[in-house]
Image (tube, rainbow, N blue to C red; front, side, top):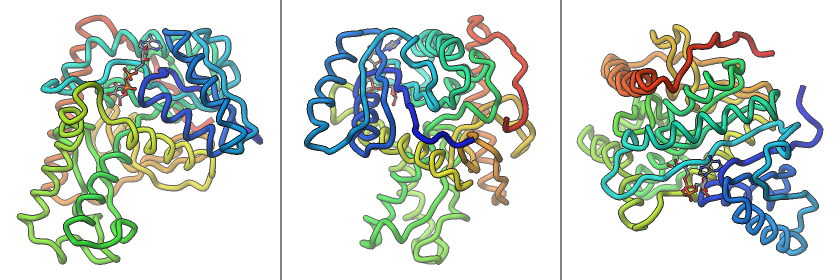
Length: 325
Ligand code: APR
């Protein structure tokens, strides 16, 4: 059942986690717990946000901590703990470093907040979502990853820029793995209700798709240290709002697949129906042959990453529970 008042914990008080905590707190959406292995960092940021509360006019609470007891009773837990990409580093390079962190955090979440919905933000996203699902042993409806919302927003931004139109006129879904093999679904991309392919040439679309894929790396190289955080935190917030609104909205998320899109035992970006129970349905779009091929190429990358974690004994096979309970 939809809670009356939400408690949301954000693990990782770095750039993405703290910005998400700020958005949640300042919009007055939830009582927020900010957790970091660096306790004072989390406490300091929480105090700083609290000091702004009389100005931003929120009556919600926020605390910073390193104690997982404090997340008990959370309705949603967002995992942002982990290292961001460095210039020249692929998301896949991050696997080994971030897997140890996500595994540790997921085990603590399952102990302290066993009823929570978990949203994974740590990269490489799809394999970290899979690891969080297997480590918590939570129902597959309860664990999802944030990527498609961000990739979709980047794609929309670049399309609107190219056409010099309002971003709100562009609708799209970006599926597949969060990375170089993401799959913007051109057949489901519309501009004022018209197919994208009727307003832009195939060559232009290809260029925009390439720039969308490279956008994360472009930001990494401009920032010098760290990676994007305003748009990832906004994207996580978008998913949280869909969960809280409880309307069954279709939002792209990395979800556990059991036969959908011809894939099993993998987490991939797919359109999901979200409500207060989590991912209640993976929505199966009709894809073009080209999109199907791109999606399966994308799946191979995630399968490779999962194999890598298995080889390092980081994933222990657990039964993923079915149903939306
Ligand atoms: N438990 C809790 N917090 C941890 C742990 C842990 N085991 N390990 C690291 N952290 C914390 C760090 O102390 C740091 O404060 O995670 C935080 C990460 O913050 P940043 O380094 O600023 O990274 P950020 O930009 O927030 O990105 C975090 O999100 O988008 C992804 O690719 C990105 O994987 C990266 C993650």
